[in-house]
Structures are given as C-alpha cells and as structure tokens.
Image (cartoon, rainbow, N blue to C red; front, side, top):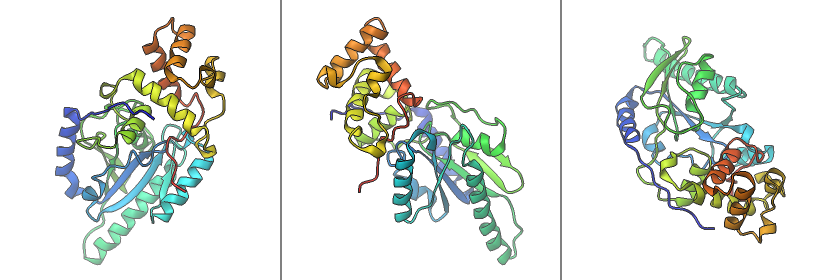
Length: 289
C-alpha cells in the first residue's frame, strides 16, 4: 500500500517539550493517553525517558470507536506485555471513574512511602501525556467534572502546560500533545493523520484519503478490525470493488455525485466520516497474532 509522506514538528510542540522537561522532576505519576484506534502509533518513543521510574498509568481513550473484539484483543496483548490498560471514552465519560480511582491508588502508594520517611502526605502530581488530539484535555475535564481546559477533536488545541486541582488527592498537569522530532515510521504517521492526531498541515488530504480507502480494503479481511463489507457503498452509493478497487477512480466518481466533482472536498468528507465513526467502529491497528 502506498503511504504519503507525512512530517510535522511545529514550534509550539518543541516549546511544549522544553516546558515538559522542566516540570518532570515535580511529577509522581505519568498518565499516558493513547488512541484506541491506533494504540501503537500513539505510543511516544521517548516515554520511558520521561517516566524515569515514575509510576505509569496507561489510558486507552476512544474505546467506543473500535469493536469489542478489537478491544479484547488489545487488552490481552497489553496484559501479556505486563501493562494494565485502562479503557475509557472521555467524551461520554465511560471508564473515567476507574481511571481516577487508579490514579488515586497510585497516590496512596506514594503517600505511604512519604509517611514511612516521616513526611506529610500530599496530593499526587500527575502528568497527562500523549500525542495531539488523543483526548487528554477531555479526560481532565471529565475527571474534574467541569470544563477547566480547552478540548476539541483536532490537534494543537492545548498550547501550554497548566496545573488543575482534582479534590484533595490529585493535581493534574495538562500538557500539549508532544510528537517525536521526526516521524520515521511513515505507516504510523499515516495512522496519526487518518485519526486526526496530527495537524493537517503535515499531509495532503487527498493522498491520505486514498490511503484510507486502501486501508479499509485490507482491514475488511480482518474481522476484529470492524470494517463492514460494503460500508462505502452503503454510505456513498458506490462500491469500491465496482471501480476495480481503484481508489483514485472511486474518489473521482463519488466526488461527482456528492461534491460537484471537487475531489479535495470529497476527500475531506471521507476522512471526517471515518473520524466521527460514521463508517463504523474501526481499529486501524490490531496486535500481531
């Protein structure tokens, strides 16, 4: 499958990483947030360097956007890797209470150690960390039960670090999404673009939409991925297979029907439909058998 070149490292991301490094010594717990559709592509390669022995809570957000079969498969995979994944839908609030309880338990362990050293207990200081647009701010708003940080399903909304108090037990540091300086794995970069977890300035919309069509054709053969056979025909009235699996020809034909021949607008519509789960709950990544 052809993969369009994708590269993005804007200035505010670099600045945020510098700010992050200055605050790491204050952190007790790292709450890492990933996208359920692409839990490997949204794993930051520098994470272990940032954790440096701190407690780590792995949160997989957007659980509603993949099938239960995909979630169960990933859950087994992570546990086989000695990691406990906490699944949630920060937008709806599903699973957020369990995440909060896990963070508070981590804080209790911290304060037990502090008491054993003759120190007074204090709220645990937790950093929410992850790629842009994986739902960190939405998770914080759900934890606090009010909108205390800006949240939207697009990359780059959070630009600065901000502390948020959650009762007497937890202080949360909301950090901007942090990307690696280079996106060397272009397949992972494509997945980030498809899920809108990277800024649109990093890629060509039409090329990414064509890659989505090819991806859906491949995933249709994997039941756990959740791609319903004929989903494109159901939504747009034209079957990709009927166009001899030519993604470009399909996009042009569908654009004639739905966007007056504007393939760019049709490409954006296709991507938006996928991102809003209007093509169904689809996992772009599945663990290897």
